Image (tube, rainbow over all chains, first blue to last red):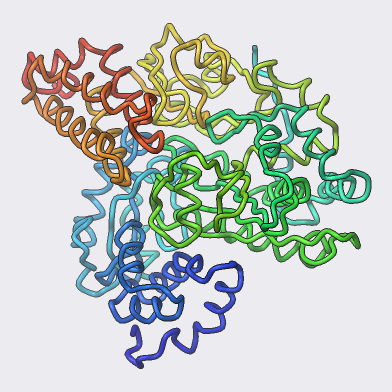
Length: 164
Length: 427
């Protein structure tokens, strides 16, 4: 369990998860929305949580694992407190996304798709498929914040602001 | 058709308060719902939407009213509405604009659709990469409940309805309607064989209508102003207003609203033309899946029929403008990395073919390809093009169309990479 207390859902999320389940005629339909909240809350999906969630939704751990591995926004390795998706698809690619990726990787000291977070646990980065922000290319999505029209000069400032 | 601006789908978006229910109501918002619930029967809504011939704005262009008419009669099962907001086609961002700036128009469209099809529950499947759109919709749902436009006994009538946002988690294939249904049910986003079509057996094995965000956002106008007002806009092929997403090497990228059938060349000029005073190399007109158009092919009307006659697709109307410095081989490598990554893996031609094509084009880009590779690339794509029924969904076609058209129209550039053993654009 994310907090290691062996109870699923964790106390602080139980009411919210029960509310999600209530939206659907079948419990399993709540799987992806709940996994998204777990990912957001704990920066990764643990085996314990997958087992707990499977029992909570009356499905199997294998089914949950199959879903976790299908979608790119779930990670079984702990991501940074701030996870950066850098769009690398067409519109961003032709407006300098590759150069930005190298800059972010260099400044954060962490590689995309390594599954690693930076030494201080603050950041991780992946390239993402088209983020649907093409009019602001090149762009990133950090947590729930979209940042567009990024120039190489802005990278330091973006990282500093996230560091808070 | 020349450019004729409309102010329907994104009406009011220039205002800071555009997403609020107060603003929406001040612009005749929810009047269509009131009219429908108090004066019209569900079948009259279906008939009016069918009369307006709203072609599906997700890219397939199927008429919404006809789709609604496919619901089986007399089935003792709940009916669901599933709004497709998994806007993931590279180069497309119109649905995000609607959801972030005008969420109530979409909600009103969903409520009208639910009333028309006899549904009490609708799910809006918003991709996980759109947290802003999800938050905007949830806020709007709360507001609609407070004002009595959603929930039990809406506006004092017997119609009760709930709309929920359902988040995706990063998978392009969930934009395919049955992949989306699999995802809502809590599974991997695997598309399903059709038939049965969703209208007969969809979400939770119940009759389900699937419509795109922009499609549903047209419904309030059709009901409030009437189908004739809708038919007066656009072209006979594609009536109504249309959102165009313009990005890439262009001076003023953005989301623009015009009558459907806007001229592509004039649209490019409207957006300030190619950036930095450079020359145009080509335009991808309908999202990354679309066949590329060369500069002498862009004097075309952006409706479904005209784009098909021009050898491409209107698709999601995501236009990516390419200037003369663009390497087409590199562009195709980027596109094929995308499609190979997003193939769900169920069908062999798509799973193996997209990866194979990606390897070939990567080799050519690196200067390690042969002339035979260029033919092989085209043949591989021709092979996984699934219109002959080789694959469950159209993802393989989406990868084949750019591959074949880039090779056909820019073959000299592929050959140049082979001859020089490097990219000619990079000196």
